Image (cartoon, rainbow, N blue to C red; front, side, top):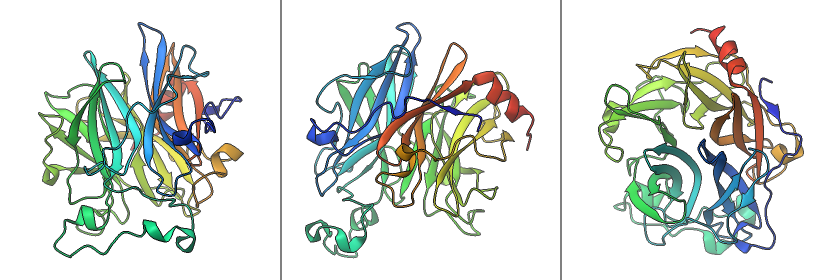
Length: 344
């Protein structure tokens, strides 16, 4: 594996003293402030409640490995009755100017303890049968993606829904700068499969817009789909990193064994809708207990929402088994060099 797992993993584990994060701390987004030499991390957190309400916690580190939580309270959470009223999870962070732009997956209603067999889930969490006239996202509790803006990870502007209300659409994030005058977004709509979409399974799509909250989904283009034996479906993970040969993009593939592994590709700098290089083998896979024993019924997950570069080293912050926060690293030039050996 090109990414080397930190021997001190997990770097964050559930905190029994805090009910809101007593079961889960996972799937972290991250940003490195080079001036402060500090990594800021938002992580997905949940307690033992049957509804499984999901919130975001905040932690920081000066060395990239040892993180200190900022508070005994969440810094961002659901607003009941809204499009993100049930859960807020899987944050991706880019900084543009003085502001952090955070995309997050969400649902209108809490997801419940999804990893349990259906017959073991509390009966009170069974959603009512809504009329057929109700919007699909309400009837089916579809996953949406929201956008939040902040300067300090404590006070927020909840900008609104980013994705189409007709789609179950997550794994959404931006490139950190405009390309050819437009913002660029990657996303993974679950239902866009079949001959009409050019992919048999959920895949990574790309779109551009002049406004970060206004996207024409009829203009989305298929960026990449499952191509190797370890992938049956794929989705993007962390905001791409600009390198001289292209945008370094880490993605996940779910295999026939239901395990989540990580792959890597390069996107063209001036035309990010073009994949120029892609590794045929995964760069990280779940093997440790903190990656295989948690809240995922498939048995093994490595799932990053953030990657940063510190003094030439790539730090990939990932969730293990839907329960823990872990980190893996490698020299950035090493990963890019390996990619350059695999043009597509």
